[in-house]
Length: 69
Image (cartoon, rainbow, N blue to C red; front, side, top):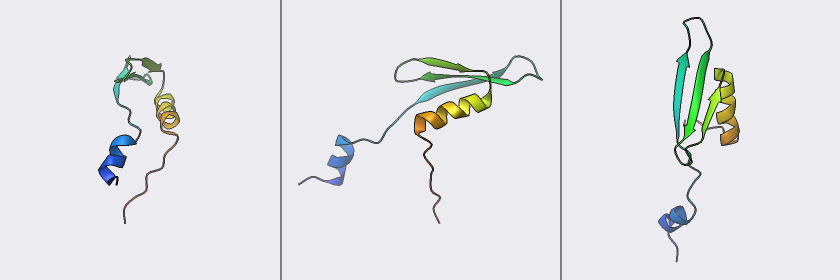
């Protein structure tokens, strides 16, 4: 007989961890960003915040979180 814990350990939910860096090269310039995967070390650079957000949207499959009522 398997338990809920057994199921959770054998089928863990997807997990990703990133180090996110944000900066501006000058006060009136667009924000830049880089994302480094904790798992692989891969670094991806972005020239704008919308590009950064699109990256996370793509990586999460556009998952919508429901709000508790």
